[in-house]
Every structure is written in structure tokens, then in C-alpha cells.
Image (cartoon, helix red, strand yellow):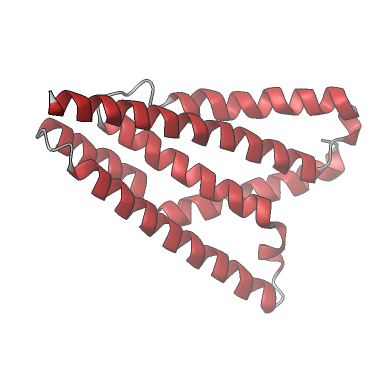
Length: 178
């Protein structure tokens, strides 16, 4: 990204981050705490209900953030214009990934529950940006391309979080049945 586009990218990334924090509203910590409690109490059956409730609440809060962004745009404030559909999809995937990662951590698999957010997402951003720069040239990377890279890295992280949670949850349910 050149100097002209870097400020736009930082603005969009900041808006994505703000929307993420407003829409998750502490839910990842709640999921981690409650699922840890369920695991310690050998009440693995409650994990699904807790996670589904947290996901529904996250989606409702994300919808409220999107509605607020729309209202802000209608009254002419420049705040919401940077948040296009791909940016909102990135917030959605990021929130879902974090909820699943914290559920995995709550089941006692701390390391695997942190791989997506601490390794795949930031590493994916760096690697994908380097690939894009090699393909189009360093000065030709646009803000839209950078947001697409952010979305792709977040999708990679979310996919990993989903697979990890399914594997961890499946192991716990099989162990309980045995």
C-alpha cells in the first residue's frame, strides 16, 4: 500500500476492529469462562447451548452495529462509509472465529484454541499481502485488495477455529459416551 492508500486502509481496519469489539461485547470471555466451568463439572452437554446463545447474541449485536452505521451514513457523517459488505463479512467471521476459539480453549485445548488468532490470521495477512504485492506490484496494491486479504486471512482463521472446535467437541462427546 502506498502512502495515499495506507490511511484509508487504517481507517477501514479501525472500523472493522471497532465493530468487532462492539458486537462481541465480552462474549468471548463469557464463552471461555462458562465452557471451562462446564468442562470442569463434566457437563459437556451444556457447551452447545452456551455457544449457540453467544453466536445469536453476537449476530444481533453485529446487526445493531450495521444498523447504526447505516443511520450514521444517512445523516451524512463520514464514519460509516468505509464499511462495505466485505468489511462487515470480515467482522462476522472474526467474531465467529473468536467465539469458537474460546470454546475450544474452554474445553481445555488452550494452544489449539489460539492458533487461528495468534498465528493464522496475522500470518495469513502478511503472506497474502506479499503474494498480492508480487502479483500486481508493491505500488499497485489498493485498499480494496488489502481488505480482501484481511477477509481471506480471517476466513482461514475462522475455518481453522471451526474444524478445531468440531474435533475437540467430538472427542469430548465420544469420551462421555464411552
